[in-house]
Structure formats: C-alpha cells, structure tokens
Length: 508
Ligand code: GAP
Image 1 (cartoon, rainbow, N blue to C red):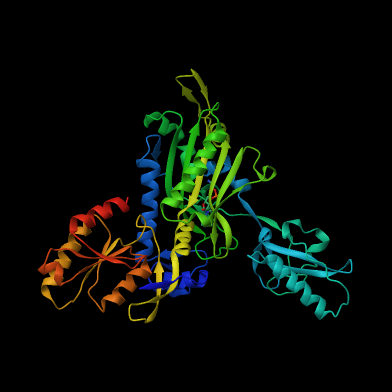
Image 2: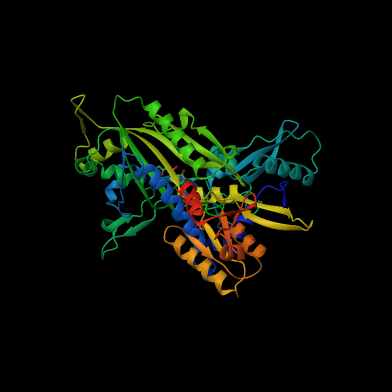
C-alpha cells in the first residue's frame, strides 16, 4: 500500500463533521437547537478528554515529588472574587449593534479609514480573523467602487474598536448590517456567571461560578502547607471546570462558556530566581505537549509585551498552537509574584506567610502559574492528527481514508481486536479471550462486522493506533496474530506477550 501525502490543510468544517459523525463532540442540548458556547463530549470524546487529563495529572502530580493535587469547590465564598480582582476587573469590552441586537467584543472588531488621495472617504469594519487586513482592504476597494471615487486608495491601517475615537464610532459600519450609526461605545462586561446561594435571591446571596481554578489553590494554600508536608519550591495542581460568559464564544470548543482547566501554582521563595523557574516551566509544558503527540512545527512562544502586563506580573509567555483558524493561545505560563496570596491575606486577615527553615525567615511565596484548557488541547490534537489520504493498494486501486493520528498516550481506543471471520467459532473465541484480557488494563474495541479493510478504516478514523486480527494461523499454528499499524498501515505477526510489552511501552 502507498499513501499520497499531498493532502490539503485540515479545515474546521472537517473537524466538526468528524466530531459529530464519530461521537467525539456534540453541541449541548442538541435536540433543542443547541446552546451557544456549551458542548457535550460523546463516547469517544469523553475517553479522549479523560486520557488528556490523566496524562497531565500523572506527569504533573503523581510522577513528581514536588507537586500535590487539589479539588476545590466550583462555587467559593464571594469574597474570593473580590480579593482576586475578578469582581472589579474580569471584564471584556462589549459593543452592541442597536439594529441587529448582535454583540461584539471591541478588541475583536476591527475598523479602518478608507483614504483616497489623502482624503478620508469613509470607514470599513471586519471581525477578527486570519485575514482581517485583507477583508478590510477588500471592503475599502468595494466602497471606492460603489461611490465611484477616482484616485489612489491607500492601504488600510486596521485598528481595533477599543481605539476608536468618540467621533469615529458613529461612522464605523456594524459588521452585522454593513451600515454605520448603530454601534455603541465599548462598555465593560463582567464575564463571571452569577448565581444565588440559599433561599434568598437578593444581593446578600450573590455568588459566582468560578472563572478559573487558580483561586482554589491560593485560598487553600495555608491548609495544604499545614497538612501536606510540602516545602518550597512546591506546587498545587488542579483540574476542573471553569465558566466564563464569553461575549463571542467561537471556533468550536476553542472559546466556550463552560470549559475545563488544568492549572498548577508553583510556589517559590521570594529570593528564588523567578526567571529561571518561569523558563523551566515553559519548557516543561512544551515538552509535555510534544509527549502527547502535538507536532513541534505547530507550536510557538509569545511573550506578552511588558506594557500590557498587570502591574504585579513579572512576565507571561503563551505557548501558541497553529489551529486552522490561526495561531492562538493554548497554554499561558505566568510569573505572578506574590500578588494573589497577598490579596487573600489582606482580605481574609489570615497570614499567608511561609516559614523557611533554612533561611530562618517568614515571607509570602511567589508563584509561577502554568494554566491550560483541556478543550483547547483536545481541539489541537484533533486538528494536528486529522488527515484525508489517497491510499493505493497492491492491485492499484485508490481509496480515500480518513485518519486521526493520535498519540497512543491519549487515543480513546488503544487496540481493536478483530476476528478474521465472524462465523468461525474458534476465531471468535480466541479474539474474545484476548479482548477480555486487554480490557482489564486498556480501552479496547471488539469488532467482527464487515470486511477487514473496512474495519481498519473505522479504527483509523477514530485514531486507534493498532488493530490485531485473529486468523487461522493464530489458532492452527503458533498463536501469533497480525498487528496492523495505523500510521504506516504495515502489518506484522506478533504474540500476546509482545503485544502487552508494546502497550506497556507506548501507553503511559
Ligand atoms: N488562572 C489563569 C487563567 O485562567 P487564562 O489565560 O484566562 O488564565 C488559561 O486561561 C487557559 O484556559 C487558556 O490558556 C486556555 O487554554 C483556557 N481557556 C481560557 N478561556 C477559555 C475559554 N473561554 N474556552 C476554552 N478554554 C479557555
């Protein structure tokens, strides 16, 4: 068999279609028409997500001596969010279109003056995308043509709507209607979901669904230090749901309103070399992404400019991933000084001091925070692993195959067990015996329906790294079976012990 690798770049349409077709991801409340910004993970999606979580937890917590786990509550005391700054400042700039009633994030809505021979003849707008500048330029050209203006059109200079001057706002067309005059000035919109705790629904009962898991670690810091036998430097890690009322949830599960975070707060001494610790954590995170199969070519680093950092922040670097809709933040690694612990110490009146035995002094530890979204990793592995290929068999027949090249570490199914024929009791019996044995340790799949080639294709599409086929040689000769590799599509004969050794090495 040979493979034509000149395949087109993966599209989001292909990923969304596969996710639905094979049961990875559905829109939430599908039978009611869906609910924007919320998703359900189906049978394969929930396995894939669990595997991503488990790999992170094993590598971050169980396989390290300096990090412990935590599972804090989703709804915390409302004072937590006042102290952390979320009540006052966890906002996005919101712009309304008064005609269409659509809402936009001002920093994702771009505009440009249309300038001909040095004269401004109007404004154009476009929503942020891979090709915002091209869209604005095309709109400017269309305006010049429509107004039949002679002269030289200058290249557009895109700005986002937060930079619009008051006199410009009414001249900028709404992306929803194409007409000016309906956009409001940006206003701050708090992204926390509010709820009420207890029987009263008044101001005294207001509480919030957490917008990040991080505050759980800061608030429980004292409890962990007092009980966890931890010594600086050490980390507290947590995996859990977070909720943000995003103005424009988009790009499938990339930006949603309910999502899952994996965050770790790594506490260091006030005298420690924070830059070194920050760099080490950036590299740890990068290596971890490679270990679950993301290609190095799709990863890059983005250092936030100093002038955009919060006053307490020493530095933030994002690991970026090349998604089909552009290069976007996957994992943020922030050096946050001792801001969070100090805020909670001041607001609660409880000391967050750590006593350093060696230095014989007390101080509030500083922190390095790697924070990543499980859903964003899951989308990245789907996008990086997806391919549609032309496969030519020995007889020269060309066939299309869709394949998901997922790392064995995270693949939802590790091995598919296939008896060559379903009506031969001896084949089926041996296949089921192996299947049951594998099932004790691994997620495996048993399939006896259809031609063997078709069964391989079904597994390729869901990312199963290996298929084993039980044939007549298995039962009549040495007990070996065919191991078929998803990526190379090569086949070889191996025995049961070898299969378990392969799984032991590659699934960890
Ligand atoms: N405690 C720091 C913090 O929460 P963040 O950059 O706001 O930082 C961390 O979020 C990570 O959480 C992001 O890098 C991203 O992977 C994920 N994330 C944030 N908002 C998200 C959303 N609306 N949908 C999906 N994932 C999101």
